[in-house]
Image: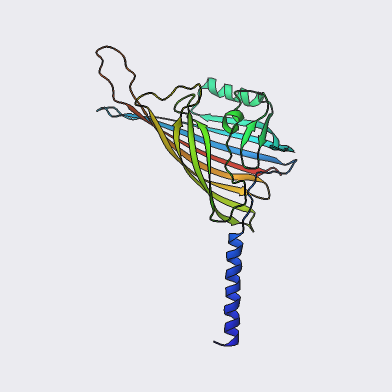
Amino acid sequence: MGFSARRRAVGVAWLALFAQAAGAQAVLLQIRPRIGDTLRMHLSQTVEMTGTTRERGDKPSTMTTSVEVFTRAIAQQWTSGGTLMQTITDSVAMNPTTPGSLSALRRRAMQAKPVWLRVSTDGAMEMVDDGDPHSELRQLFGEMPAMLARTPVSVGESWTREMQIPLSSEPGAMGSVRATFRLDSLGRNGDIAYISMRGSLSRINTPGGLPAGPGYGTSGQLSGAIQIDRRLGWITDSKSSIIVRSTIASNSTRKGEPERAPMEVRTKITQWIRAMRAR
């Protein structure tokens, strides 16, 4: 091997080592928008519920609803618990709708007062005022659990978070979610972080809540992908899918009436949130 060839080989080796070191560099993923920034968010959510019984001749029953919410969030102040943000609902659309429900949604959107939201650096969100308890923002964004690692992570590294979410198939019940997040890659010179998520869900008995009766069970899986703009300090794209399967035993108590087979309910919740800084 000539001198020039050896020099090229050494150069390639150094480049490979540099790329490996850059890929292994740990980064801190945080939600920390700049004070004064206005972030426009568009949430699309679809809920599909299918109920099936194992009796002969019974056909599956399916119901699908979808909602779109456009909001603005203005970063107002940094606090020890996170960024204090003023959030405003600009418009809400739901499908299917009736004339009554549509007019109610429009009226609530028009009369919506600004809601104050505290967002911690690890992604947890909580409402901090006593505004409209029926606000779409409160229902969709309030009390979101933390999901980011609190320490720097490298590409390929994973972390696990546990959280609680309400079960739409059983009002008042809560589900326990154990999710594993992974920093898949960094893009745009490290400014964009690409994160994947997978996890499982199970029903939990909360204090004061009704325990699951005999023949009742709930389990599920979730998956998703998240993009964080590290310069913006915000999640700019988040897609998630949760599939919950519940088995509900018949509660028929009439004398002489044969016991019906349990119903199996499959609920699929698909959510897509996009965000960008207002120009």
